[in-house]
Length: 126
Image (cartoon, rainbow, N blue to C red; front, side):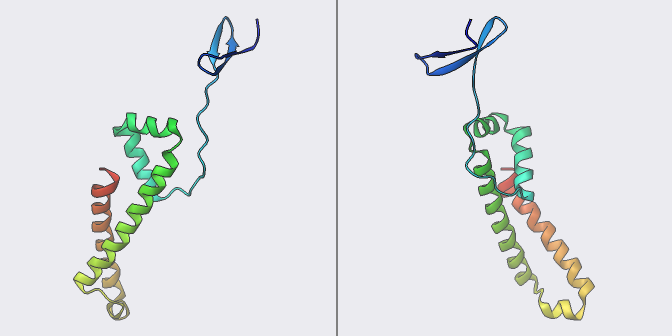
């Protein structure tokens, strides 16, 4: 028996494993690997736990990294925009930073936490 056979009807190669021919299947290679950011990791974990079919579809089609990179970029832009808008609305300036650094840090941490919750609710866990 041949180790490999080719089936012209479906265009697949098969490999002999003991007494059975198993199809030689591989996942398509993704075009580029982009760095993994905070938002990307959280969304990937969310998909793995709550949207398994969608995650499997992206993974097997080779589009997972591109999709996660897009989500990461959207979330980062939204986060930065929210932080700036909240800073302006609450009147947090560089002048406050120079005058009372501890208060500025506390207010900025509060703003960042609020912005993070909004981004997670709108983009990451949607």
